[in-house]
Length: 110
Image (cartoon, rainbow, N blue to C red):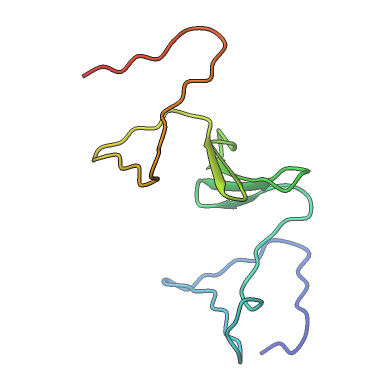
């Protein structure tokens, strides 16, 4: 049991067969939670990379392509190919499919 801040200056390794890191708190609310962050770069979980750019738009990707998904308030931007294996549903009353490239065109094929 550690009461206070635990500082580790090298790798932290768990050798338990089924290890867990568990956050427990006396209260639950909008300001309680667990934060994993880096002050000097990215955070990798398995082969998923989480980064933050200077203006606060977090990115999610792989260790080889770190900016596949960019998150901002009320928006998600995809930088790769989106493959959908089921129905694509648009629920907005007046939804639009918009092509914004300055050259080329939009092709819908079946």
